[in-house]
Image (cartoon, rainbow, N blue to C red):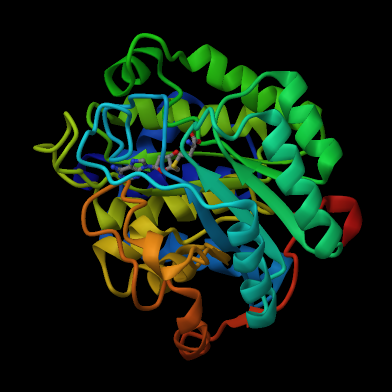
Amino acid sequence: MENKISDRQFWECAGKLSEGRHLTQEQWRILLEGRSKERQRELARRASDLRDRIYGKRIFIRGLIEFTNYCKNDCYYCGIRRSNKNASRYRLTEEQILDCCRAGYELGFRTFVLQGGEDPYFNDERMAEIIRAIRQEFSRCAITLSIGEKEKESYALFKEAGADRYLLRHETADEDHYRKLHPPELSLSHRIRCLETLKDLGYQTGAGIMVGSPGQTTQTLIEDMEFLERLQPEMVGIGPFIPHHDTPFKGEPQGELELTLYLLSLIRLLLPRVLLPATTALGTIDPMGREMGVLAGANVVMPNLSSENVRGKYLLYDNKIHTGKEAAECLDALRESMKAIGYDVVVDRGDFLREDMK
Ligand code: SAH
């Protein structure tokens, strides 16, 4: 495919992206379709250099607490969708969540990410109460939420209670593609409105996609890149789509490792200061996925802090790693593997570095 796109065309677009200039759809197409091993290697090098210039050789860690796998939504790709009767459901109590934070703090985590399905049990009152308790005990840690679409009042309440950041992947910026991934009661416009609200409220906000989700095309990826450019999120989470055997997408192919790595580099170049995780899904499809993600431009890793007995139940997709390097207890192994590629796992909140803060 890259043969149709000349070096001159390709590097002109890559150069423009590196200079922070706006690309047309056609130019994005040239970058996305002109991928070759060699071009990818060079863009990864540029992305890595750029990240090093801004954040240094520092890798930020986030303690991921998957506190509920109940969900009222029915997304076609997700293993904890409400129609999956085979999922073994669980909820952590406030005390269990705090215990996760305590263990994580001892290990060196200074950001806690509360992620879950959209579980009505955790209503605004309960959520605010949990956030306040964490804020009270860990006044200098960052609290990140990843609990889906809410009303503005709820987001404001959580912010007030002490939350700093919010992860809400947009999943795709293309209306038709969004329809293919979600049931009719969910809409792209509402999800985008949520992201804009989160930004307005002052959250460090994270968007993102699954790479290779069913129906994804170069055109939908172009729209994703344009959307990210417009939104200017502080964080972007991307990982390969991985089929789950109890979902309508069980027979769909997994997203590609190399395309995921390539997109990480493009996103780093598009949003130089973005906090960009090498995700669990990336680590799931390849044992070196996280290291390769960092070498492509990522600077965040999110090991799991949830207690051992529930960790195997938060199964968004098949074969999700839940022992080994992603587990917080194996942080030493993670430190070593990052060290081996020239990076340091640091004890730090790892906030988004605004231009005026350098
Ligand atoms: N309920 C929250 C958290 C969702 S889980 C929310 O709506 O934001 C976090 C992310 O996991 C999702 O946004 C989705 O992009 C990803 N995910 C879900 N199922 C997946 C699958 N089968 N393969 C890869 N990633 C998946």
